[in-house]
Length: 169
Length: 289
Image (tube, each protein chain N blue to C red):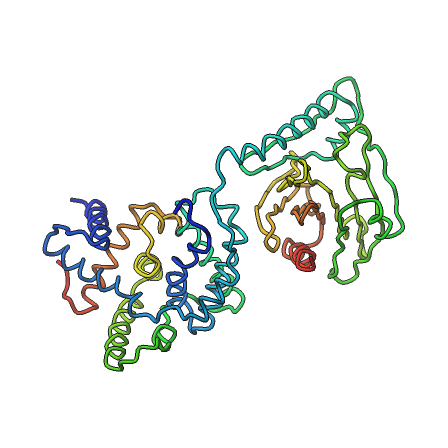
């Protein structure tokens, strides 16, 4: 990431942060507002980023802070996966069969994820939607890297059963 | 094999598999990898970023190249500032007037990765700390006429608080680049015990100039042996620190909120306002700029 300009970083991380927000809040407009606020704050605080290689973790910490402020502001609980936000947004796909299949897969996956603990959900979101490494997730959540690996492993084991793949012995 | 080891190995394999590498796995782990790959499809299942939203965010993105500061650049910026601070320390250690000034400052300067602690001790030989001059002023306009930075005033105050006095504090014998008066103090008081129900606002013009550039002291952390708690925070977008100063038993602690606004470092003191109330006042002052 060294040497890339901030605009390029915006382009690279915008979908990741927006998708993360979509799974955290219950409407698309709010997810976009929080995403925009995250990047604005990131730009304002860019001088505090000492290690550019840690940009992803730093950015998602800001994203989580924005979410925290939102929840404190509105006294709403964030410990859920919002299906309405993720499923309710048209993506411009002109083929209804494909869109229906994607919606069904998305609904199944998110429903299964929603049954995990909040910490497991958050690691899944950061790993697979935010695209973070275990090390970056550890920095965001202030856990050890091995703890992240264990929680992720357990979460995926649980999901295996819930997604109809079968139980793991 | 312990679960932790299994989990770590699985994570390593997972990362390689998600990066497109072929990974040899046990049957059980391969099934788990299938689940992970399904999770990795989530971004594809979510709608793409709309062009309007992308334009909205990118419109606010800086177009200038953003690169991490290189070490030599940091040093070029910090070295002159550090030299100035060492000069301050020298003044504090070797001249009575400097000691007097530093006694009032009692400051620790944070400069990026640097922190310079200035904690003056009573000078040997019975030297006493003397403030060079206290000039009482009639109005904020009078204070403004003395300094080259904007004197900020709180627009929102707790009920009953009114401006009681303005003082300009100057020191003699300080380096010429340190503007005098060194700070302006606004004193607000409320009805009730005047010793407790007060809000003091000190404003320091602490820009450090180097040629055409203004090298700003990012934060002044007023240190004291009485500090029982220090909390880093932000006032709006500006870094700050909230210090809690212990007092005598049974007396409420003094809170000092210090932050930077442009070229001005502000210090707010109160013994009765809560940290949240102080931050609201400070944030409002920041928002007005």
